[in-house]
Image 1 (tube, rainbow, N blue to C red):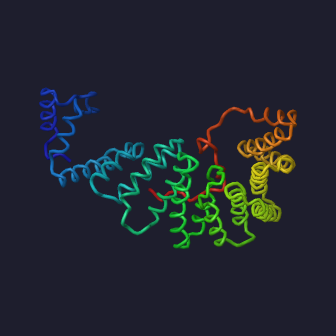
Image 2: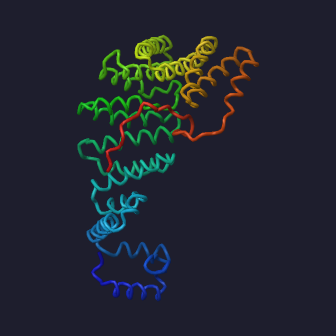
Image 3: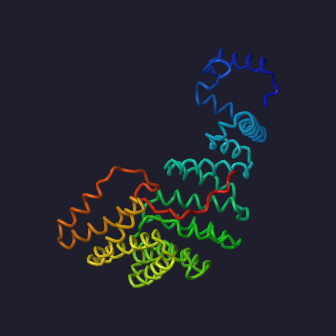
Length: 345
């Protein structure tokens, strides 16, 4: 990468160290150099022409890929930065995507959001493709975990752009995965999530398991976000019919958890209490802590409102379980049905 030989390069760096411009850290062969002052670093960076800086960044990125594959794998944001500065958008997007996915996997939602936002500008002005759709989907997931409730429409907008691409190219499985991605429960937020799920329902056979999953999610969204209790019950009823016909206990559990949440949100406390035992039973059988907590929360809250404090305490005591990491920092979404993975390799 350097026009100098190794010996000449080390001599030149040694002179800069003697001049007080650089410092050296480590011992051969693991030696690193850094600027002593930020102003010196910035001046050095700005001194080459822009085309030269781009070339240097490209050479650094390619050297990291070929000579330091472990670094490329563990710090994809480093290569993403150099490819961005080298004005190589295709490579930059790939590594920003990798960096964001790594952050999401460790619940670093804010960090992931920054990586995805860095990658998207590289796709501006270009036709939507699979890589951009995967980036939009990942961005929507990061936004869902970090934005405030009143901003959640931005997350839905990102999901919608990904959905549109997958639907247009006939990739129904990925489109459905985007549409059923569980956002935090919203109250009268008007994000457009219900419309997205309704569009996904047109892509699946009406009595399929895929339709059942979407209907279960649709009932929860329109029941809480749009306040449509009757519409929610209709969707839940169709989902439960499919669950019974397919002997799908997970779908039944998910739907009943949604039923209890909507009943409580609409102040139908007795109905929430009546539906919760079956939801809790299925959750315990499946070992699904999150579903159990959701059903117990609706039951305990309803019993409290009804004045049944003893019944409330029974559920509240069961809620006191050891903490467990979830994929959402405010309210963990249930995403056990899978969703389209990223296309970055």
